[in-house]
Amino acid sequence: MDYWYAFSGLAIGAIVGMTGVGGGALMTPLLVIAFGIPPAIAVGTDLLYGALTKAGGAWIHRNAVDWKIVGLLASGSIPAAIFGILLLESLPSGATTPVISTALGIALVLTSAALLFRERIMQSTPSSEAHAAATVISGAIIGFFVSVSSIGAGALGTVALFHLYPRLSAIRVVATDIAHAVPLTAIAGTAHAAIGTVDFHLLEMLILGSLPGIHIGSLLASKIPEKMLRRMLAGMLILIGGKLIF
Image (tube, rainbow, N blue to C red; front, top):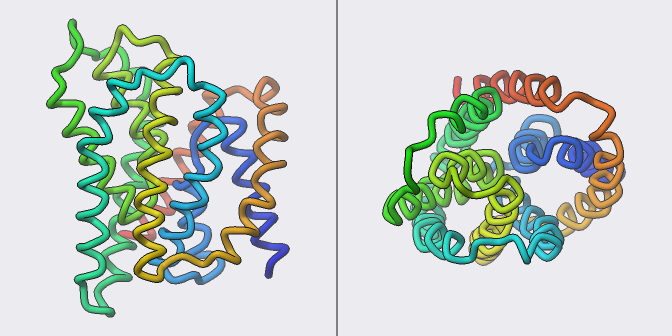
């Protein structure tokens, strides 16, 4: 089984390397559906996995990060993430799995919509930069979904920033989104670890496979049309999301 965990990390790392998204959106459903990992364990483990893998990207893009926007997002996302985890902890044991499965499904459908309609959403940007309150609210929505599903810090965060800050260059949007995702996933993952919903051996195997996978995906990115990859990924997420919801 360890080899299959590492291979899963390799495959999903390659997809992330090719598209820039798909880490949490694919990893958590894979752990739940294919390997039978309890949803709470899958979410908690994937959050720490995301924090560790995104930290390197944040360091590489550190000079392009808009730290003011990171602060606004985090002021909404981190309290919302903590609230989400406290909510999960307060649920009766039998209610946790259906709640997380439903949240996973909704987050996957939203992520697929973000992938499919990214250009249209970017074109509908307001004439001036959004108020700080809108950024904080967006962060809160992302933080809640991340804490209960481990999904949303990538595709949803990027699309939200493109819409809210149309004057920000693409590289600064990506860098800012990654920088915000690191503390969010780290804090949410640590909180999950505190309540016992992280499998550290599984985490080790996933990281072992994902590091070379991301490198391989980055090399393949220029040879496969991004739009085609996004559509395939979005279609797969809709199917998985529908299965988890219904």
